[in-house]
Image (cartoon, rainbow, N blue to C red; front, side, top):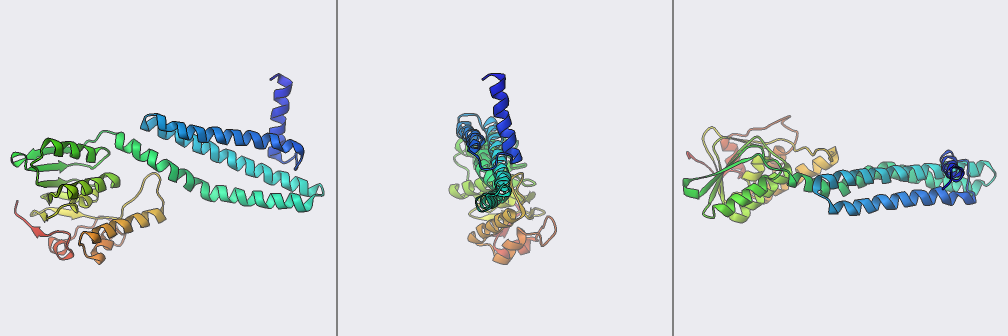
Length: 295
């Protein structure tokens, strides 16, 4: 394309954005360009699945952000073009198009971020799963018991599965730590349940650790040990409504495992304004702990 043609093309795009084209025959050019860009962005989203988790996530984030920006640009330009057409005499068509475009702008602003978040969550989960874990796992009592201690970060569930394969005689797991990623904690809990292991804690077991503790067939707590609970948060793709729903779901999962509903909902709420450490007696009454033990 020569300089003159390129200048003319940019001129049409600029005039569209300013609404100067109205609803003329030249309107197809910026609309077609925007459609092509959005199609390319969606193609990049599909192609991102071919990359490693980290670059795939950022490629998808860039592609979705660009597609959302172009969609907003297209709708705003169409709104301005409709208004221009209405002012030029074609009121019914011009203002009608402007109204529809205005509604589309509102829809993009209201629903766009949620759409991007929903589509990026699986990719973000793969990033988390691919990261190495810093949790410490060791076998004791002749390989019949595992000790899992530390922050349950990404890869912790995978590390536990590998340890279980190495020590097939395990019947109990001793848990400790100041929390962890919600996804990892649930995976650990479910894996413990699948294995049919008992759970035990002799130290601090907070938040995500307390979730994992619930996987035990028989759940015991040692003297001086504490189980801590608080309202779960979701970062970076969460919001208040979603966090409320997630906390309610965690409470329901506790109830399914025999925990008192009132206790379960209090544990994963903001009623206590921070970390809540119920007494051993309260834990046993609620059905979360089956017994206190010396070892």
